[in-house]
Length: 125
Image (cartoon, rainbow, N blue to C red; front, side, top):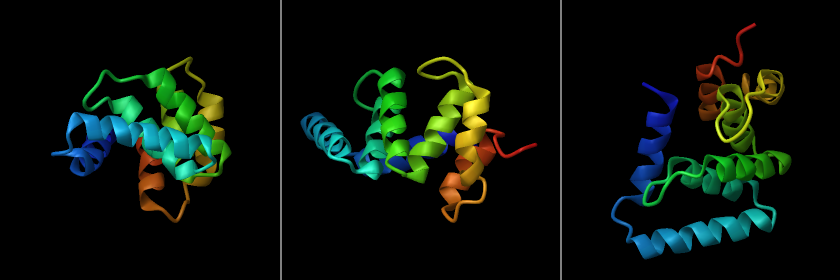
């Protein structure tokens, strides 16, 4: 199963049945929390931006949100950013940087982080 399908199902499970106005409020809250220095909020905001759900996907903004989350030391944001870099989503492809970001994730204690970077082939030598 594709990593995006798994990610979409996981986030959709949180979002199903939530009115559009509540989704909009959630995105505003995630953005504000991200800007305030919450790396996990940056990751969650990035997922919503990248997958779209009730709005068009915004991969450029998603990549920026993951970048901020990664700078704030959120390993999940780094894994998502590495995958986007590897595939050239939301900006130019950069395999070298993707592998650099993924290096720690290849053995991360969080199995979701490992799955993200391993699924993108970033742990292979």
